[in-house]
Length: 186
Image (cartoon, rainbow, N blue to C red):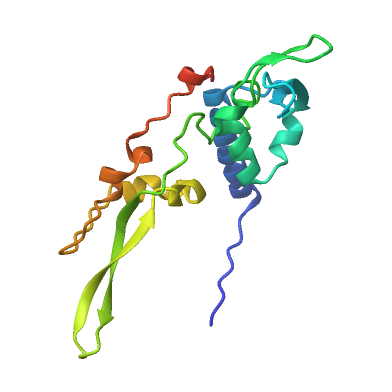
């Protein structure tokens, strides 16, 4: 195994850094900037109106993607409100727009409906090779949101399959994110 290293000159390194910083700046401008804090609805059995707790956008940005996605997208967290001390706060998807930029509030969670994901070759008892369908549930996209576009645009056919493609079965395939619908900034 040969390992190749690439040496960059100072000017090449600075150029690369400039391009990277420009991309980050454009991304932040597209979504807006983070405020200092956001409204976090505390779940309470005694008070169904969800008392609001103040949390910082900085602490939100430090969360792992799974928790970050939940707070930025989940319907339960799409609540503006006032804390006990009287501070008016916006939901995380609005107040922490830059942090929540890669997520879309209101995205369907996924159901238990099955779709045809792909095929595989299987040898039966007689030694014959047959094509068999590989199935997934729509909730698969809850954990693999980066695959929505790829899987939804793929057509897979298997003879005698009672399940359709992801595009036909899963609501998330036809979902288009419009941050303005949820108070987000572009």
